[in-house]
Every structure is written in structure tokens, then in C-alpha cells.
Length: 458
Image (cartoon, rainbow, N blue to C red):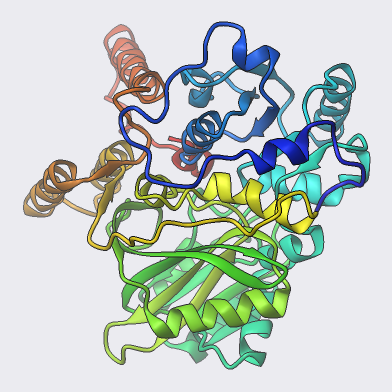
């Protein structure tokens, strides 16, 4: 997880963290000119995702100077008022070039004691090449072997089976004929998903097949980069998400919320609306068992499927990272980005006491991702998945979620530029399409589509 050799000042700073608590309108103010870059400990944040702005705001509030990595123009976190600097770097997927640039940057900047990888691409890259990180630089993530285990769905299904945690009936398949045969054994509807969420999968998290004909149509060719896929029984119901922070296999903080809606008409895809709920005893028990078995240290999020028919809670996945919706627990005192640093300090003996969490838990608080909701509606209309009354119902739910939300996923009135930049990108894309349509005089192009990476980012 971390390199040996404590960077100067790291332990003392960890001990001086303010107590965790809900951020209010006055708890986070921009650092004084020159203060963040000169005196505060630096943290290099890698990854352009929805949770990136929460990480920036959290670490600035904790007294750090966030340096935001940017590999593309759309890195909206770079526009946060709380970032101290921006580092331009090659795409993380270009592993050799990225690592060479990272090592050179850290070699030239001896004042950066921490790296905070936000997304799975950067996490995997650093887990596989941790030996290249300069001695004395800490990487805020679970231990590499634990992280890589969590990213392997088939391995995790085997582990949860050994622990007696329910999981949907699943088959591993290596070609199209096996896929169709497994779908027949499983029964329709069924879910097909990649074993590795970083592999290409048609810009989707999963594919829901209601019939054999749909399965043949969806998998006319094998998705490249996947050695095998998983065919899984479809479970109709809700999707609880369990955020946690742990040290040496012991959970120190736990926050639970339900996914109410996603950006896809069939209920798969990315969450756009959620609500915090009181901890469910059986889910917390499952999380405790998983974390203890893995001897997990760091933050993560376990997702389950709660069957609408039987009420059985099935394991879905364990994400060894901050969940995209960590803005919700952050707003109500469960500051998981800060807790990730606390867990690292506690693991290495740099903190005299375990991380602290609020005494008051806040169920019934709602979070909404407006941009994802809008894109989901546009994509569903373009694909013919909704029309007429269905589109109106979606629009009504969108407006209701927006007005009821206690937390908006990326927007905060004291730091509006990151979200403003996202909407500026949308307007620019729409204008460019309209202009091409007018100039070319051609048939109006399909509505904007995003690949999976951009959907996670916004």
C-alpha cells in the first residue's frame, strides 16, 4: 500500500487533522494567497471522475494543497477553486509514458508526499507498478493484492461463496456459443458483464438480455479485450451501496444508501438518484465479513442487489475506491476522502488514534446527478427505449429529484466552476452538432452519446 520511509512532516500533519464533521457554509474557505502551495502538504490527485471534486474539497478542508492531474481537456476538477495546481500528464492507459512522466514529476517535486488515485485505471496502474513510485511517497489506496482481488469479479464471487454471502447464479464464458448456452441455463432475462470493469464492453456496465434473440443481437461479435465474460441471473430489485473505511480488516466507518434510479431505462448503468438509509444489519454483517477476510485497509464501497421478490441481499461487487456518490456521506460528516488518509496514517502508526466519525447518522438524505439524468434521457430517446409518456415520466422524475435533492453530485455553490465547465462542454457539443447540421444540410445526427469513461467523469 505504501512505501517505507515517512516523509518529513507527514505524521505530525496527520495528528493535526481537524475532527471529521459535516462541512457547512463556513468550514471550507479558499487558502490565502501562496499558503496552499508553500506551506501545506501536497496531494497529487489522479483521475477525472464525479467524486474527484469531493476529494479536492475534502483535502483542502483538511489543510492539504490538492494538485490535480489532468490528461484531457475535460478534466473538470482542475477548475475547482480549492485546487492548488494542475499537472498535465499523458493518459494513464498509456502506462509507460504515464509512469515515466509521474516519476519525473515526483522526482522534481520533493514536496509531494501523497498520491490519491480516484479511478480504477489509475489504481490498477499504481498497484501493478508500485515499485516505480519514489521512496517516501505514499499512495492512498488499499494494498495492491487486495485491490487487484476486488477488481476480479470471478475471484470475488468465489470468495463471497466461501463466506456464505448470497450471490446471483453466474457462469464464466469464453466465447459466443458458451455465452448463449449459459444464458439458456440461467434463464431470461439475464445479465452479461465483463469480469474486469476496465475492459471494453460497448460503453456499458452490463448488457441486459430478455430473450435469446436479444443476446444474439447484442453479442454478434465478442467484445475485444475480454478473456471471458460473466453470465448472471437477473435480480429485479433495489441496489444498496455500503461505503466503508477500514484498517487491518476492521470497519471504522460505515454509511449506507440506496440507488433509486440510474441513467438507463432498464435500471442498469450509473446512479443518478439515491438516498441515505439507516444501516441494514445483514448488509453490515456481510461487509464486516468481507473486510475481515480481505484484511482490507482503506476506503471502499460494497454494492448489493436486494431482490424485490424474496428480499434476499445478493453481493454485486466491492469497489476498492471511493464511490462516485461519496459527496452524499461527505455532506453529512462521513468524509471518506479524509478517512482514506486517516486509515493510511493509522495503518503506518502515524496517527495515535483511529479515524473519528460523527455520532449522528443522517438517513433520508437525497443525492442527484442532474447531468447524468439528462444524458440518460437523451440516450434513451435516441435508442428508442422511451418515447411519449415514458419520456414525460422520466422528465417528471428528473425534476422531482432535482428539487428534492439535499446534495447535488458535483455542484456546490461555493465551488461552482467545475460543474459550470461540464455544462459549458455540453452546450459547446450541442452547438457544434447544430452547426454541422446546418452547414452540411444532412439529416440531424443522433443525440449526444457518451462513452462509459465520460459518463463516470461528469
